[in-house]
Length: 79
Image (cartoon, rainbow, N blue to C red; front, side, top):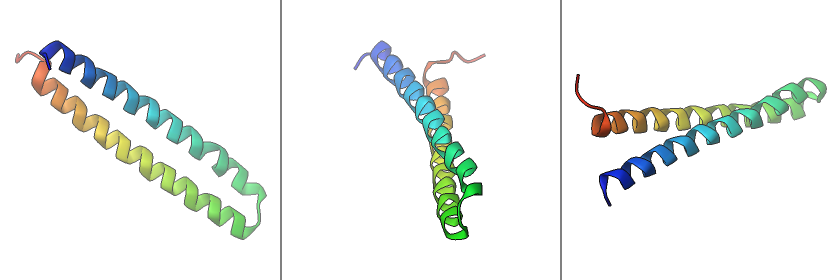
């Protein structure tokens, strides 16, 4: 794989992770808002789902940050 191909692949991966984060966070917003209208049990289940989605988004943010650091180390010129 050439340097140019690696660079493009890493950028595409970073973009995909960023998009994934937005989707996951959006999936957490609606249930959180709907939980206010449900019974205690239903609301608790929704809160648990929202927490899982928030954790997933945080994990993806960590992956994205690590990939950005790796990208910078490989492709950003030293100053």
